[in-house]
Length: 120
Image 1 (tube, rainbow, N blue to C red):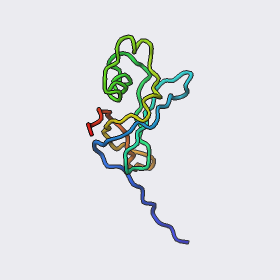
Image 2 (image 1 turned 180 degrees about the vertical axis):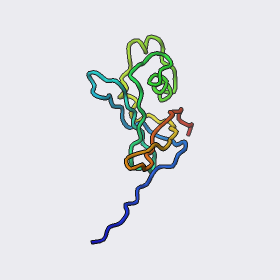
Image 3 (image 1 turned 120 degrees about the horizontal axis):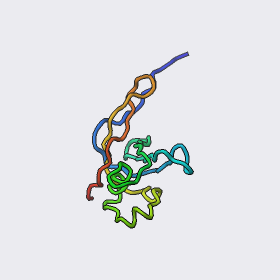
Image 4 (image 1 turned 135 degrees about the horizontal axis):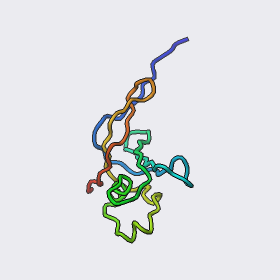
């Protein structure tokens, strides 16, 4: 029997153009403690994630990332009424990717910062 090392592509650290691919409430939709944004980078087949605490107060990571992805600040009324985060799926942005230790100490790419999309 022949055994080979599986070559796993790991996205390099750096800044990449990305698309919001998913928004998931954890542990569940009814009582979330955090929201997880999923991002896709062209040429990389795995989804990358960024966790945010559930707070939507001005200056909170969730609100800041939402406004960055939208490309504008939310009005006081919009923030008070709330926003369906699922509407962010498909929106363009940039992400900063770093490596954290995954299982077995292998590098695992994750998102540290969400930035506005670059103009085409």
